[in-house]
Image (cartoon, rainbow over the protein chains, first blue to last red):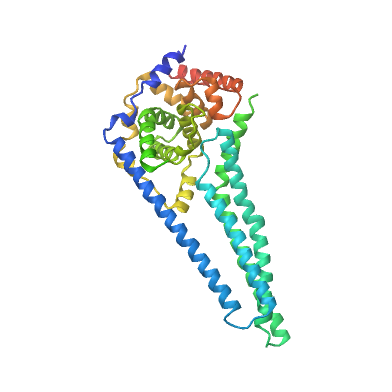
Length: 205
Length: 171
């Protein structure tokens, strides 16, 4: 007969590895100071990245709209491109950030739900949003080339539009395939494990 | 919360809870070599969540909640993925932390068998029984895991009978 009360006492008296090494506290505090430095570095990197993106977008708009005379169509296309990039990039970064800042304060079932929701958002981003972004990108590029190829013959222009669209489509197709394969390999096993855990915790028969 | 205040609070939380966190981390893993990594990840999550602790629950319940959630998601593959994004790999403990062998050497026979039996359970069951062995009440476990108190009772009784059977077989 197993005495769980005695085992409980025994369990709680286990000499912890944390107690067995005098350097343990120092090691943890050194790890934390490393973390603090890392967090500061990440903040600096994020500020630099955001500044860089703003600068690139600004230069792009400036060169497209003010460096040479442009049509209203080009202005619309550039505006659409900037909006599309900002929307997609914000969504992408938000999901990435959520992955690193999961709320571990919640109860486990809510926590698992959050993680699963995050996985599903990542999948949807590439299944739906990225495709939509790709379609918008193809339309925008075609609008831009409508202006740029103005001097060429109709057949050449049509050929160019078809080639550009096909090339973009191919790049997007490969990008989505590659991303989905990575998702299947990296995320799906964890996702399946969490789904099983959730089912097991919820369904007591 | 200003930095030094946070550090002070963390240091108290760490000193008072390191043993129970370590025990739960150890119980939750099948591969005991990963216990340092998991322990460190729990510490990092506690550090990051410290400002959000509002004294609405007992500190031990809060600590266990973080430990259980970190352990549930602890996965080398996921860790590699998030570290790639975060570019942060804390490994300070590796050289200072005693290997699990020296930890297990301090166990008596019953404890060794208990650990062996626990390692045969599902991850979520290993954590639930770990909380039970830490003397958490059913209500507290329910608060941590998010399942109803009656379910906690049913679950623990089932786990206990599986453990008893496995341990009897070891004698």
